[in-house]
Figure (cartoon, helix red, strand yellow):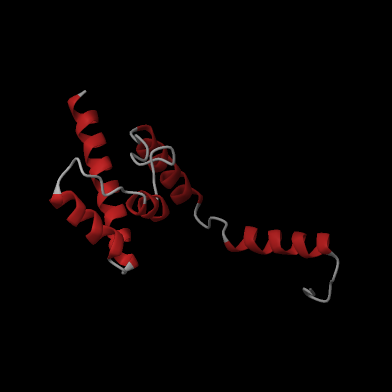
Amino acid sequence: MQVDGCVDDSVIINKSVDHFRQSYSCRNKFRADALFDQFNRLRSAYVGDLLSASRAFDTELVSKVVFDLHQGKSTGYLWVLHVNILQYCHHPSILVLFTKLFQLILVVSLTVLIIVT
């Protein structure tokens, strides 16, 4: 790779750092300070993501659970019918929608817990 006639990696990295430092530096020190103060005020009231990585699940997990459902005898005919519909619907967007629905249910229930406590 060549940048401004240089092929040395360290020179290219330093030129990139200088370029982005100049491009994204503040032009108005007072405005930058005001934005930083606003950020600190908003940050002090920030609770965090209710659906953090420890509680999150993805479409792959939902898909695995759906396809591992057993069509047992104990729950009746309607359960078998619902399991068949879930397992044999061949459109992947259905599983994405289920994932989003489950995540929404989880966030709403966590929000209610936070409000109640």
